[in-house]
Length: 367
Image 1 (cartoon, helix red, strand yellow):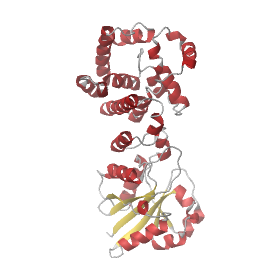
Image 2 (cartoon, rainbow, N blue to C red):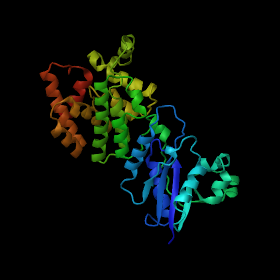
Image 3 (cartoon, one colour):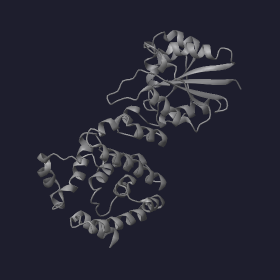
Image 4 (cartoon, rainbow, N blue to C red):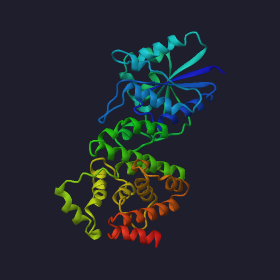
């Protein structure tokens, strides 16, 4: 079978699991990875509201995302261009690069790109010099005039992964592979720039560490939606700096839990910030944040993971390896282990365990 090369252009800021799915499904339909290779072609131009990554970060994240797959590659041609990175110039570049090889060359586009293709610079040149592949969206109509005029070919029976780079940049979803998330976490990209403005550096690093640990606990326990654990862990301490002006509001809203040490009020304020400043409306995430410091009776899996990750975070500076190992093996048993150790620590250091929430938590799980 003739070799096929597919150029997959986009902002990839960041590359997510939907992009990887498109590449793998395209490979499958076109004969498999031994016949078809996909070249990711990140571009310079994109539109966003929260800080983008620089070209080097884009390339590194793509490399991390594709490293375990056969015949997936990345080319930085457009990122190196001076001036606009027009697609027709990229097509010329690839035609010249592969002119001596016996291949079929394709350019892969989604439905949104197909609908606007007539607006692309030198669209006719692109369509006449390379085969255009349309990756359809389910239950989504497309511009039939463009489809026919520019001779698009639609990939049939492909699977869809609903992911959005914009949602990832804004912390509405984290549908990226673990290695890309670790890169984002380590380099303070996207939503982390905003998170950093709320807390000091030590608390910021602690929050990132708790987020990754909570997600890993969920993954190791084979609990679904582990990305929610990351979000809850990242934002659990976002309300540490509570304005004095809202103390009374917190006490009124959570009066049924009062009296409680004011140092614990931040869990309630963190949930408020997560919802109102970061638009987190998933109640399982908000609830985990809201009670991460005190615990409570009948906690959810995400609540247990965030509570425990907060207490055993390696950045706290003590040996928590045994508790972390226990959490990785079995979340429920590991949580009880952490809870027992934390109760002993609080009593030894004269901390508040007499509040209603903490007492109910200890009684529910330990007594």
